Amino acid sequence: MLRMTGIGKSFLGVRVLGGVDLEVSAGEVHAVVGENGAGKSTLMKILAGVHAPDEGTIEIDGRSVAFGHPVEAQRAGVAIIYQELTLLPERTVAENVFLGREPVRRGLVDRAAMETATGELLKSLGEESFGPRDLVRRLSVARQQVVEIAKALSLNARIVVMDEPTAPLADHEVELLYTLVRRLTARGIAVLYVSHRLREIFDLADRITVLKDGARVTTTEASSLDTAGLVRLMVGRELDSYYPPRAADPPGEVLLSVRGGGNARLRDIDLDLRAGEIVGVAGLQGSGRTELAKALFGAEPFTTGEMTPRRPRSVREAIAAGIGLVTEDRKAEGLLLNQRVRDNALLVARATGAPQPRTGVERLLERVRLSPPRPAQEVRLLSGGNQQKVVLAKWMTVAPRVLLFDEPTRGVDVGAKAAIHDLMRELSQDGMAILMISSELPELIGMSDRIVVLRDGRLAGELPAGSTEEAVMSLAAAS
Image (cartoon, rainbow, N blue to C red):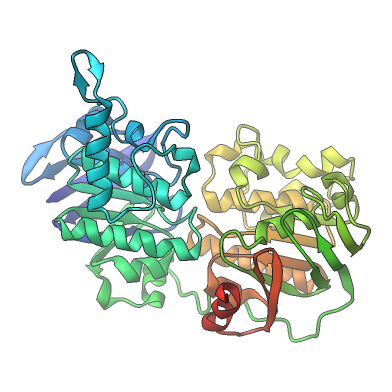
């Protein structure tokens, strides 16, 4: 169905794609993988008409095409669903599906026809939990993705590109996406699937194309690879283990303690965080994981219970008490994207009047493995993994005793994940207490010295290091 041959692209003299070939068949899930900066997004945007290639050809059904605009790609049957959804929240599902293409009758928008067509699209996707007249802002992120897919089908898309589709989803919502992907391929639609989550690649993909440094490394059947082999192709080296070894020494003194903590979202929280320990937090969406981090950090403070150090009433009080928070959404809450790396690294120190790091910002950026460590570069130009490393540097400038991580490796490639994991373990071995929230159970199990499980705003139980995914989910989902 699709053949891209010799695709090349440069930006400001920097070559980001060099002679990439890609072939996709009807009814196939074709995964495109690689580290951040490998060229995946640029290749997909060329297919979607966002960028024009400097060289190479694109064929759909054997016919040569050239897109000067995304609308031209849509007309040729190409639809792209970005990680950050492009829906209008204050409009209905039907209005979003037919945005800019509303059916007209006697000079007016034919709402009945639009809603009927949208209803048929939703029915074809097996979606019955919402309808054409529902406002998009009232839908979960997973349901909003259904709307995006319905919109693609309304355009008669035959090639659907999904860019990190599960990044904003909780674990229990991922299965819904799997079902939708299988329904698309059953209709003969080709799906190009871009993801850092290797489990999804092996769950869904028929074939895998690996990109590295703007070039195609290989295209192979998914069944011919295992996780270790795929990682080796992506990063060009062995990663003996995804997770660094746990500390041999027992944890030290209690640096943070909560007894009976509660607020509007949490109840009866008892928790101790010790020096030299990584405590994982598991739970389904809505269980209170992020709310726990925000309560400890004074952003949504505990209103009941006791906490040592003293229960913070604000973020400033929490920072003064030696508590830091790496937020779930680094772009919206963790960084100033249009400012330099140096200025972002010094955000907390400058805001709180803390002394700047003795070793200097450059040494700090080297320690967090920022690659390359360019203090004058704007943060928006960095990959997701490097942006997360800048967030870590921001907190390391003030050396907190307790550091809370909310989804520390979301949207980060495997090489950057390994660097962040190594740094987290180094910090804990230096005596820091770490609380880590993650929706990825392998990460949670691989990194944690013990795991606490939340359910409905309460602690459902605690598990030791090395517990199974089944043990975690049985606590998280128990009725």
